[in-house]
Image (cartoon, rainbow, N blue to C red):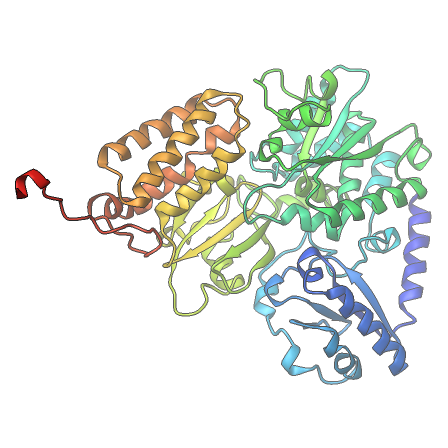
Length: 552
């Protein structure tokens, strides 16, 4: 495969699509499929055939606005229809080339116009199971350019210049990590894509793998070329069957096109990828636990150093990045590091994909430039809190993050800003809460999650999260005391400072952030025995019983 062959494929796809006057793109991500978008696609295909109109009905990945699913996008008009079902197919097809069907149209230009799509640029426009669709949208141009025109160090320099930081939560500079692996000595090196997405309310990586898997594989191949690796693994949860299915098709097609395997692009570069399924353990998102799982051992973390960049999978130098990080690589190589670094803030470059969930109108997937304010994301893109309720807090960073109150909504999204606010970027989950949420109960929920998901290897995490859960349960039940609250704070400090891995080290964050911004709710539960939000089932204190001997 070379640039000329890629251009031939692009031209072939263009000529094929030119036969049609309209393209009907049907979202077939997990969310819309759960609402029978597959039946909708079949109905649209039958309606097009019956009408005699020249229209291509295409399966696509997630379009982002999950709250309005199933979604259908009509090109070139860019008409978006929502809440579709098979019964609407004939009406939509009959109106092709005419006025849109008003009652089905999603008029949410503001929702999309405020976004900048880099990772999600192909979502909703290509069939995720057709490699030629990806190639027609500049797919694999970056890989061919890199292996035929660039030295490995040039690729690393481009990534370093972009300012890209790991999108898995830690925010470590990607170029620096790649440089470390490239310098590591070893006869064999590995590249691992961490697709073990386990945060409550998070579905960014799943959607990218379902919608544009070739993009992730191209990013992995570029990384392998840069660091000198010849083998890759995609570690993805078995609970993501659609993502696994599309990844399998993606790898098969890439091998057939000569974009994976031996002598890629007729060069000495060899690289292939395998899929490894995770059993759903949250701790396997930690890189050393993930490596143990791939090796066939129990997924538990181990102390570092040595770091995986020096001694990782089977003791060999290993590069680990998450799905979104790899999805950013190809456009950076195509357009240059300066292009990417022109977006975002001073220390957080580019864009970030977030999963908006909870008490928000427009639930779904969004991609915005770093530096955009939380208020703009929640109120401008997300449509704010529905009904008559008021915004109370937003939880970012999954169970490792914290709850941010309304007075801080104007801070710009960045790694540093979120940490200073008592939360973190995490992988991109963003759960919105309104005035019906009890913040003590929210903290209890996340601690219960961490307690359940703790691997148990280190005592501070195993025992500490259990004790914190017990104390929070007392407070939620109305039996807690101020001594319990003080003990809770001591436990938070101990668990944070002494746990082995990131799960335990960040587990106290929801407690610390809710105490920082919503301490009065803890006081109400403890002193006044009431839950301001009416969530916790606190029984009124019983009147003191008089002993029978006194009555006698």
